[in-house]
Image (cartoon, rainbow, N blue to C red):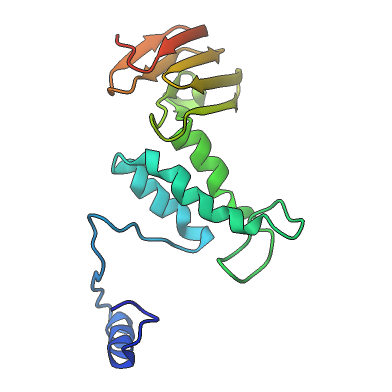
Length: 178
């Protein structure tokens, strides 16, 4: 039974149990992804990425396009209600950069950058990430990737193999090995 279902008695029992701190998982944890309001969606997306399923994020992020209507180009507070603009709703930008394009600091202060794209998530993507040392740009086209970085890079290929690269420009294949 899901909250909002047809069985009112189960609905009220579930609410009473939750009020007493009893949480029952009533969905298939192997096949169903939980959603949250925009504010907490980053936690769900972090869990998806930590489970090794970052390639699913573009599909989850498409839900956010419902905010881009009526002349608005911002993300709202809640699904279906609330204000039209909210700073905490920057989850799509963060997730596209960190998990899909895969650019994160590998050392504090971006002294070294990690580039670990979500291979298979999308066919083409590109982005530039500001660091204290300048922009790190990443362009992915099919199975090739171009990286321009002012700092050393740890590149993670499609097979999960890591390769250390010096600062500079690099063109690699997704399956690049060390």
